[in-house]
Amino acid sequence: MSRAKWKGPYIKKKTLLNVINKKKSRESIILPKFVDSELLIHTGNKFLKILVSEEMIGHKFGELVLTRKFFSYKKK
Image (cartoon, rainbow, N blue to C red):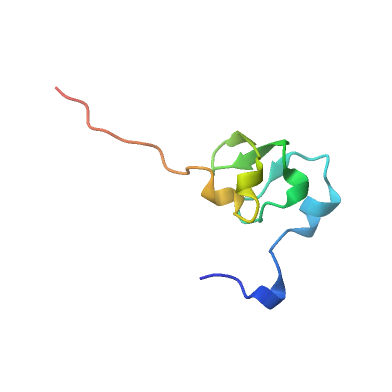
């Protein structure tokens, strides 16, 4: 379900106030001021580095990070 346009993009206030902190939440929307910066996005058990480019503006950080590990059965 998408967010209503009249509400604007969802961004945590803590994220905007603390620009020095490179750790961002998965639910925040990527803004133009994040372009060309390397950020840490939490996957649930670790942080992954992401370099933000102009094509990513408007998407959420969670769309860029895989949270599940690939699993394959081992052959005997």
